[in-house]
Length: 188
Image (cartoon, rainbow, N blue to C red; front, side):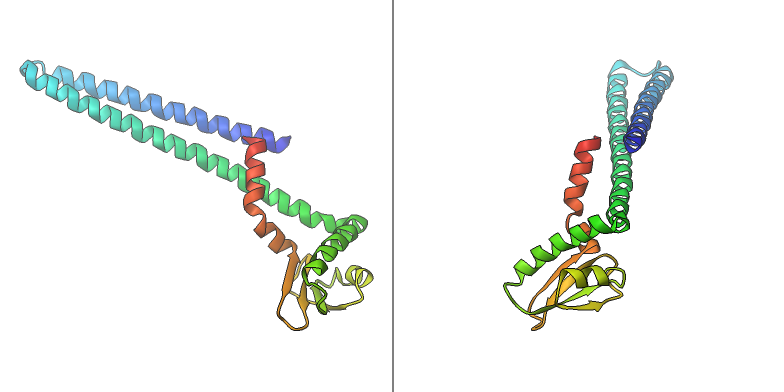
């Protein structure tokens, strides 16, 4: 809920800034047009009409440019919210390790899925020092400590033909776009 308020606040600020930029561009254009009109009182009507068209074109281009910038600013704000939320998701996933019972159940479920993918091949398990005891309770296969694994595990067939990477780092990276979509749907 706090993240939702932050997201709404950032988006509201971006919208206010966008409206301010557009309004400012329109005001500048009007002021420019008025200045140029007063400068050209002595010029014939044909030249004045041509000049007004040029100024109008400049105004349209200026407003379009300001709108594009405002749209980019809003997108940047949305991306910041999504990235902050993604960091929270990463932290919450790693916080699962604090509840040993839930974490053990999760590892067991992931282990069973990984073993199915190996189609009966002999394998070994690479994991963090912290997860070693949990995985030894889950599996009778050889468990090897790997400094590259922070949470989760990697199962490698002994023939080295196949490996299944269920490390949190890989799972989060593989699902990052899906997570961003869910975040975007729920916040925006």
